[in-house]
Image (cartoon, rainbow, N blue to C red; front, side):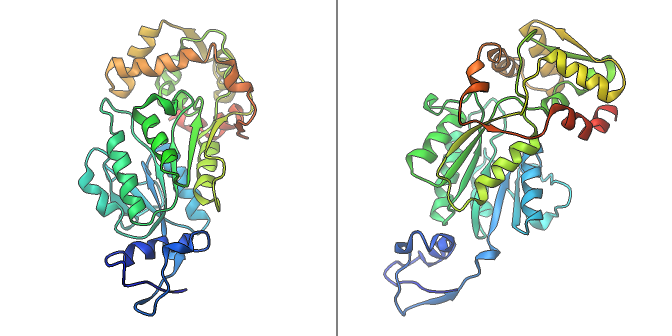
Length: 324
């Protein structure tokens, strides 16, 4: 594909080259004058996956790579998902804006944004990164958010969500409700050592969603021709109580797993001990879980994306992780 770029826009030729993937829908980006000619191969453009070593990020990266897409992992720690090499990664730290230019040094057609849980709100830095990426010609953003995050809130992920919307950018916001994989993050140790799941929910029935289904939706948001729907709450295909989860795990693991109801303070301390977070931060997770008891509308409203993987299928797929 050959494009002629107008000389009346000095310094913009490189940015316009970045934008070639949107040529058919926004031809005004290019001025056709016989002053400068370049050759561009859109297939060389990559998807930048931030938090690429996380459960969802690594799954998105794998799904894209299996579809012969070029993938770059943006990582703060240098940790990479299996099957990726250092040459497929860039340094990206949301708390350090000096890493942003390097992360955008090659042609990027879409960015998956994962903001880590931390005591510091880095939303302003993420917004600055989005703006810089747009200047470089990036045309697509997928943000990992959550069902409890309301974009009108004005801080954290909500602030990033609102920015993407107000700027009219092609974006998609994934809003998972309750992660099946949290049973590995928060409960694996107590399941393995004590045969126990702790929760603050004696009867709530929750549509737990798997990482695989979340990653599939995020990947679709990255690769769609255009995202006419810009946000989607994703839930699992069945609603289960913690007692039912314990029964499924008991059947899968071949030994009794019990469900114990504890106080919010006790569960927050349990999470803090596992993750190393401050107890106050762990308390936010517990507070979000308490909302599941009363938010029937989350599971029944129309327009939800419904995943396919059942909890039993997820447990079978992850069985060895509970036994290791």
